[in-house]
Image (tube, rainbow, N blue to C red; front, top):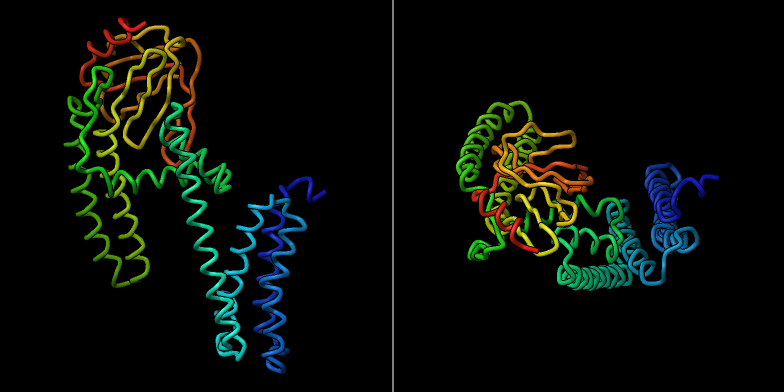
Length: 332
């Protein structure tokens, strides 16, 4: 009954975690002091081979996925052994050290191969017309088996990618592309927020540090990430404008929202000023919207941290609203 309720890979990983917890408990029990080297050998067997057997027996992994998961578990097992019994003669033996190095090298190789495979798959999806972040999410799900965590990981990778790269890349210059940040002052607003966050970071660190260095640095790291997020959003606004194609509109608003709207779903496009209907969302908030798109049916947008939101009415802060409306009216 339990196996029916839980997915088999998750149940297998839960049992592996249970094995690790039991091993950690044994190393702190009185029996450990009698024959520590013999006990260490048996516990290392459980941390590695027994755990791999559990993955094979209950996990239901395909051969390729089982190899990756098994190598990862073995490498973690060797690392756990050095932590749980560091002064034991087993962990200092040449055989143990050689096996530990070999498994770590194998894991690094498998991870590098999987990342390269996911990158190729992502590029193929983008070439097929899938939006960039959605393509990254699908690649993480299909090749790295991240499951429900894939949208969140894709969102965080987008933050790092935009914040760290592309500063010499020119923004697209095409009559199909429409920016959504100049007239609303997005860069000025982001700069002001960045200054406030920087000042707040210093003040909070100075106030909290006398009581707890750890908490102070955690808060500081959170603020630094917030600054990184603001920088990435500005970069994404610059490099990924709203694009009007013959059959769809690719709406990307920084690293906040991304949605592809089929042109056949558009009921009307006009300057903002009318009272929004139900299901309305201004994707450029906190900027004022200049264009209102009413749809015949709801569409689903991908937001920060991989969240999904359904909407039937979309507001955008397009810098050239008249040109945007004209582009949608003129293209078949």
